[in-house]
Image (cartoon, rainbow, N blue to C red; front, side, top):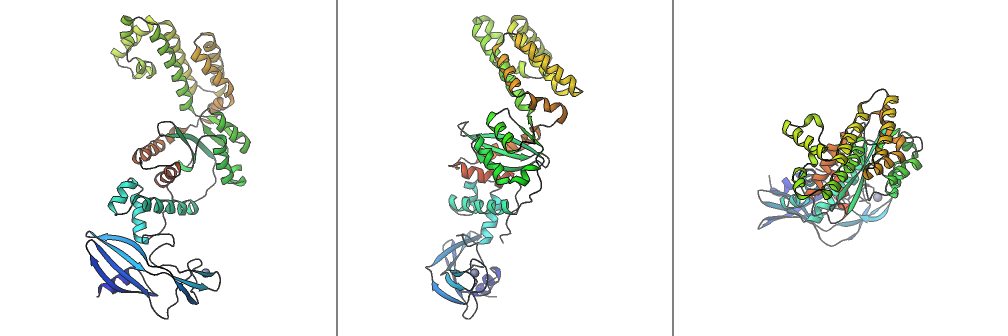
Length: 405
Ligand SMILES: [Zn+2]
């Protein structure tokens, strides 16, 4: 079989043929021409065009590499007259209309970019970074349009920081199916509004529970757009705030102590934050010295431990009673960080008490957030948020891939 025939069959050409194949260095240049008398198809609707209107200038498409030799297709696209859409560039059997790479190469790039960085993918397929970016963007566009849009009942909303906390993204998950649903720039009220608008009124109406951090902007958007949904403040975020209060007390005490005393307090942060049943014996000793020396810290430590009981307490009424009592005690301790924490709890109380009956948290999402972090570490090439968002969708949203072969 001639190489020309082989390539024509591989590319499934019907109205085109290979007129010349030439190897120059690491490139196999394949020149293509239309077969006279065959109908070229309209690039918009795919119907056979009636006649050729004009020729465009020569264009190259990069294909896969075999044994170090990259195949490149060269062709002068025709503009055809379509009876439905007018004059348009023809459809290419080997590539998508937007692409400068063949469908086979685009498919391979899309698959590799799920597990590798864009730089690495570009290196392997001898492309530039921008070509990889555009392939992934198209794959994501396809995936978002083609994915299953099942009704959403439980949403998990979280934020992801990039550039060391200088920029934020908002991520929305389907908590029932543990799938990433949406990613948007920033973490404002408008960010979430955009998500709800895109979701549409009918799909918004099916949402029953929204789990998130105690973040006023999110809460406001949810109350406005999903008035019937129950807001639930995420357990792990609440504990984060609590731990931060304890840590502030510890640091204030450190500043107050003499240098000799301070030695005992060095690296004691983890002792305080660790769950007591996980402490080793020597750690328990250190902790007890620590609390004997320091009464504000004792109070803070026991407050933290007492608060944690809330999560497992049954029935809901006892849990609520426990929390309310805890808040009273904390308010009386004169520990400023804890007073601030109580204030925070007070302003978000219904959403915190919702835990007692719903027992739902974003904890299941931790794995997915780690995956996003991985993508962000991988992609130091993401110069803007849009590329980062595209990469997150591509790697984390389990979108269907287009059948580029
Ligand atoms: Zn057409």
